Image (cartoon, rainbow, N blue to C red):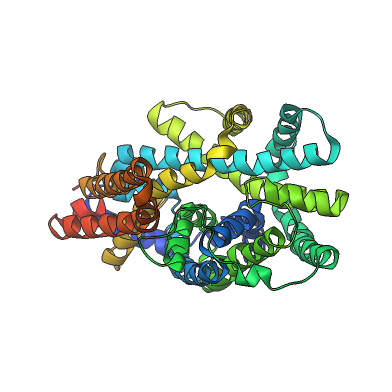
Length: 461
């Protein structure tokens, strides 16, 4: 059911009715949604990024920044998951409120491209692991990865893989534990990984302490907030507390970020010659454990890529339908996104992971800051619901668009200054994401207070 109501009284009545209606029967059970979401926790990228930050800023600083990251992520996603479940709203639907129906297309395509980029990154790691184990041309392994990954998000197959993710989780978890034990037994257990200092070959965080630079680096992965909204929209309202606490809260990030970083740091400073690079950690695990290591890598990356492929195709479909009015079946969008993923894998895109993270981090961080500000300011106002038609919303919400553009410009300018002037790189890396969030939230809040209530909410008067 979709409602197409634009009047003020009708809006309140419509959204009140939708809240009362519930529609929980069509939503995922708490167990299925949790297992599907925890598939995201097994990204090899989380192992790599923890190790890379420890190399850059030292283990202690990386640990402090990581703890702060887990705390902040838990709080933010507690808010976003509750809102998404209550309103049945995904990123694409919620963006209609803060950016307008036309402006939401920008957020949708960014989300689609970021999900596709992560699919490229995680898939490339699997291809590299296969090549390390068996040899052969890398393009062949890339093709195999895409071919076996694509069907996993189709209809019944996606439901099956959601359930299978629950069984695969122990393989990922205990596989990485085995890698730690294996490396320690073979090369010796020392405290080197705990006492590692910042690398002099990497620009120091001159704009602040290393722990703050670590926290700012994880802000580049705030795309997880968007992932949260799209997944949480599938949950039942009666399970809100459970999902806030266990599914999307701090516990998930203890596993996804904390545990993964611990493994990455230990392996990097224990296995001789292992580098904290995009493929170095995965290659090190395969070289260390042989076929068992390959299984761990393939399982972990397959689990995360079910989410990447699904969100990439879903948001690409939303963008295509909104902008180009292209009404294609779901299978077509899945195949289109898979072809894009394979073609990008053939490019040296993995080498530019940190640069890509910085750029998408600016866009996503600004969006998240605006989203949180909107939720805080609109408490008690029921003008948002995923079941309302596009005609309920304005084509452009100037408050959100101006705030997003202003924050993005600030973030990109700071990043570019760091690129032009290497001496400023530390300041740019540390303060770029933080100032982006502050500018986005502050600008939106100011514009909210200077416009009418309906205009601020993004609905037609």
